[in-house]
Amino acid sequence: MERQKIEIRAHEAALTESGELKVSGYVNKTNELSEVLGSVKQFREKIAKGAFDRAIRQAKRDIDFLAGHEAKSILASTRNNSLSLVEDDEGLFMSANITPTTFGRDYFELIRSGILRNMSFGFRSLKDSWQQVNGEMVRTVEELELIEVSVVRDPAYSHSSIAARGLEVVTDLEVPSMEQIQANKTEISNKRESNKMMKMNGTYNDFEQILRGEVRALQTTADGGAVIPEQVHDEIIKKMEETSPVFALARKLNSVAGTLRVTREDDSVQGGFVGEGENILEQAIAFKHVDLKQKRVGAAVTLSNQLINDSAVSIAEYTKDLLARRVAKSVEKSMLVGNGGVEFAGLVNDVEIANVETTEALNMDKLQDLYLAIHPSFLTNSVFIMQRDLFNEVAKLKDNNAHYFLQMGVVNGKIQHTLFGMPVHITDALTDENPVAFGNITEAYSVMIKQEAGIQEIVDSQQALRGSKLFVFDAYMDGVVVNPQAVAKLTVNAD
Image 1 (tube, helix red, strand yellow):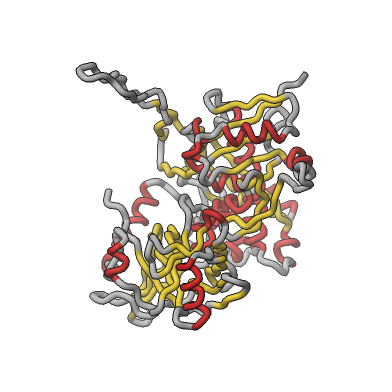
Image 2 (cartoon, helix red, strand yellow):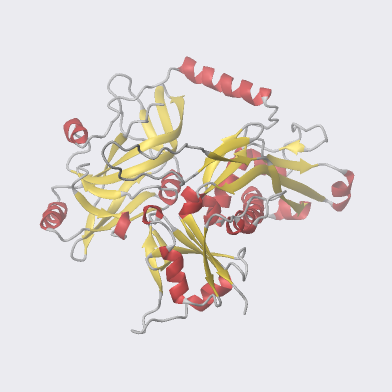
């Protein structure tokens, strides 16, 4: 499969400077149409709200602040937290402490003098949509992979400088015709029908109307349940990622039907030096596999008609958040301590992951051993997952210089607790026996999410008599460790 090429977009930014070598400014304003792009087929473009935030949280590589898109001209980076990226209500905001090299100081002076005043960013589009508005083709980028941000002199980018660093750059995007767009919509509709995904096409406004009883003609399932718009499911999954960092970090796999078989890392094959004329040790490459099956997980909420009718806030948002929080907690617990069966295969119950044993959890040497138990190749993007009670105790500990072991820092643009320089996520799911796990969750754990998930309103006489509505969100998922080398656990052995 051909690797998707990188796209470059520029934005006229009001770069400001403060402190010795610190600069900040907006890289892109979300939900705002770009200038006309494309040379063969012209179009406008906008980045959907939330796309940058998800890209930053789910980044699998360091994001660098570059000079003119040159890979070797690094001014700052998320690797050492000298670059902070965050999406706010306006768009993608960057703040950078430029490394004080001669090169860095020169570029800072160019920025401060106003010679360099524009921001640009390189990205790969993961999900987009097209529509025709007032005769113009408009592309909405809904999901993206953020590669880098750059300070540039002009809003346009240089093809030669991009090509010089070996990146495959999109020079002209293929703009679909209205016939292609309609054909794609028809194909998607047919697939949904064949999969019997009985869901309404709608938005949160539709959901709000359904909740408040303003829409009467709903599609129903065989058991009389009213089917809610499918976009609500997508929003709940995203909200689950916001609620549970552990779930957000895991690699997501999609499956339509049946069992999904995934490869599990096997490190038994080794290489070595041999003498002239001797045979190289031959070892058969035997892939291990694990099967992901569908496990039902869900939550239900009953809303009184009075609450629905008198609520001054969006009742749809309230319902989505409540269901997401409840399901996220259950999924996170299953990912960490599940025993299989109707649950996931939990991380701490996997016998192949590294195990650091101790007689007391509050032992900084053992937490350091846990850090060292991971192969250095997996340390990038690794995190501590710590039981809440233990976290509260670790937060009080100081070294011999009266400095707290637990630090506060900015990781990918957000304030984060860190231990040994690694982010710390707090959970209520881990037990006293296994109060800490550490590793690269993206590499170590995969979650399959079935596509039939959705929300239903259960219509029955009991709810009618109570003057309430019952909404049920259920999904079919499964999770398993796919790379035991990328994660380790702490086990406390009682005396």
